[in-house]
Image 1 (spheres, rainbow, N blue to C red):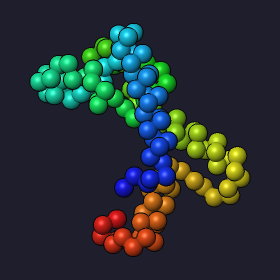
Image 2: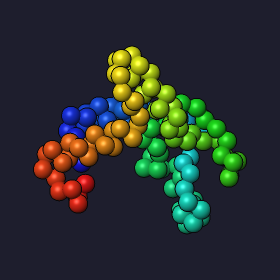
Image 3: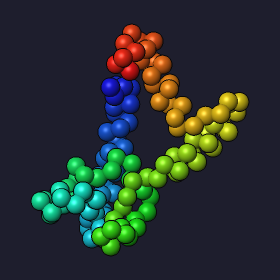
Image 4: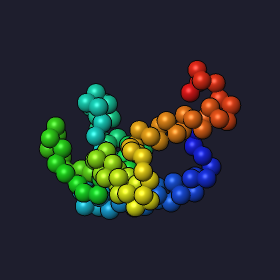
Length: 119
Protein backbone atom coordinates (compact mmCIF):
# COMPACT_ATOMS: atom_id res chain seq x y z
CA UNK A 1 0.00 0.00 0.00
CA UNK A 2 2.99 2.33 0.19
CA UNK A 3 3.21 4.40 -3.00
CA UNK A 4 6.49 3.87 -4.83
CA UNK A 5 6.75 7.64 -5.28
CA UNK A 6 7.53 8.13 -1.58
CA UNK A 7 9.66 5.03 -0.98
CA UNK A 8 13.01 6.77 -1.50
CA UNK A 9 12.02 9.78 0.61
CA UNK A 10 10.84 7.47 3.40
CA UNK A 11 14.15 5.57 3.30
CA UNK A 12 16.04 8.85 3.66
CA UNK A 13 13.76 9.91 6.52
CA UNK A 14 14.36 6.61 8.31
CA UNK A 15 18.13 7.04 7.92
CA UNK A 16 17.84 10.37 9.73
CA UNK A 17 15.64 8.82 12.42
CA UNK A 18 18.15 6.00 12.89
CA UNK A 19 20.97 8.52 13.30
CA UNK A 20 18.92 10.35 15.95
CA UNK A 21 18.20 7.01 17.67
CA UNK A 22 21.92 6.15 17.72
CA UNK A 23 22.74 9.56 19.19
CA UNK A 24 20.06 9.01 21.83
CA UNK A 25 21.56 5.62 22.70
CA UNK A 26 25.00 7.19 23.12
CA UNK A 27 23.47 9.72 25.53
CA UNK A 28 21.75 6.95 27.49
CA UNK A 29 18.11 7.45 26.51
CA UNK A 30 17.38 5.52 23.32
CA UNK A 31 14.80 3.14 24.71
CA UNK A 32 11.24 2.78 23.44
CA UNK A 33 8.06 2.14 25.39
CA UNK A 34 6.94 -1.49 25.22
CA UNK A 35 3.82 -3.07 26.69
CA UNK A 36 4.61 -4.26 30.23
CA UNK A 37 4.52 -8.02 29.57
CA UNK A 38 6.72 -7.68 26.50
CA UNK A 39 9.27 -5.56 28.34
CA UNK A 40 9.37 -8.12 31.16
CA UNK A 41 9.83 -11.00 28.73
CA UNK A 42 12.46 -9.22 26.60
CA UNK A 43 14.12 -6.59 28.82
CA UNK A 44 16.67 -5.48 26.16
CA UNK A 45 14.12 -5.22 23.33
CA UNK A 46 13.28 -1.62 24.22
CA UNK A 47 16.72 -0.63 22.89
CA UNK A 48 16.19 -2.28 19.48
CA UNK A 49 15.88 -0.07 16.41
CA UNK A 50 12.74 -1.89 15.30
CA UNK A 51 10.75 -0.44 18.23
CA UNK A 52 11.58 3.18 17.48
CA UNK A 53 8.92 5.56 16.18
CA UNK A 54 8.94 6.42 12.46
CA UNK A 55 8.10 10.01 13.38
CA UNK A 56 9.89 10.72 16.67
CA UNK A 57 9.40 13.81 18.78
CA UNK A 58 11.91 16.60 18.42
CA UNK A 59 12.55 16.47 22.16
CA UNK A 60 13.03 13.92 24.90
CA UNK A 61 10.88 13.63 28.00
CA UNK A 62 10.46 11.65 31.19
CA UNK A 63 8.09 8.71 30.83
CA UNK A 64 5.58 9.05 33.70
CA UNK A 65 5.10 5.25 33.88
CA UNK A 66 8.74 4.23 34.18
CA UNK A 67 10.55 7.52 34.94
CA UNK A 68 12.89 6.71 32.03
CA UNK A 69 14.11 9.53 29.83
CA UNK A 70 13.12 8.71 26.26
CA UNK A 71 11.92 10.14 22.97
CA UNK A 72 8.24 9.62 22.25
CA UNK A 73 6.45 9.97 18.91
CA UNK A 74 5.66 13.26 17.24
CA UNK A 75 2.48 14.55 18.84
CA UNK A 76 -0.54 14.74 16.55
CA UNK A 77 -1.04 18.42 17.37
CA UNK A 78 2.41 19.15 15.87
CA UNK A 79 1.31 17.69 12.55
CA UNK A 80 -2.00 19.54 12.75
CA UNK A 81 -0.19 22.86 13.26
CA UNK A 82 2.12 22.28 10.30
CA UNK A 83 -0.82 21.24 8.11
CA UNK A 84 -2.79 24.32 9.13
CA UNK A 85 0.16 26.57 8.18
CA UNK A 86 0.56 24.79 4.83
CA UNK A 87 -3.14 25.14 4.01
CA UNK A 88 -3.02 28.82 4.93
CA UNK A 89 0.07 29.35 2.75
CA UNK A 90 -1.61 27.73 -0.27
CA UNK A 91 -4.77 29.80 0.27
CA UNK A 92 -7.00 26.73 -0.04
CA UNK A 93 -10.47 28.08 0.82
CA UNK A 94 -11.74 24.80 2.29
CA UNK A 95 -11.28 23.42 5.77
CA UNK A 96 -8.53 20.80 5.65
CA UNK A 97 -7.45 18.53 8.49
CA UNK A 98 -5.41 15.37 8.90
CA UNK A 99 -8.57 13.29 8.48
CA UNK A 100 -8.90 14.75 4.96
CA UNK A 101 -5.95 12.57 3.91
CA UNK A 102 -7.83 9.44 4.96
CA UNK A 103 -10.78 10.39 2.76
CA UNK A 104 -8.50 11.34 -0.13
CA UNK A 105 -6.65 8.03 0.11
CA UNK A 106 -9.92 6.08 0.11
CA UNK A 107 -11.19 8.09 -2.87
CA UNK A 108 -8.03 7.34 -4.86
CA UNK A 109 -8.31 3.63 -4.05
CA UNK A 110 -11.90 3.58 -5.31
CA UNK A 111 -10.93 5.51 -8.44
CA UNK A 112 -8.24 2.90 -9.10
CA UNK A 113 -10.71 0.03 -9.01
CA UNK A 114 -10.52 -1.22 -5.43
CA UNK A 115 -13.74 -2.69 -4.04
CA UNK A 116 -15.57 -0.50 -1.53
CA UNK A 117 -15.61 -3.47 0.89
CA UNK A 118 -11.81 -3.61 0.71
CA UNK A 119 -11.46 0.10 1.30
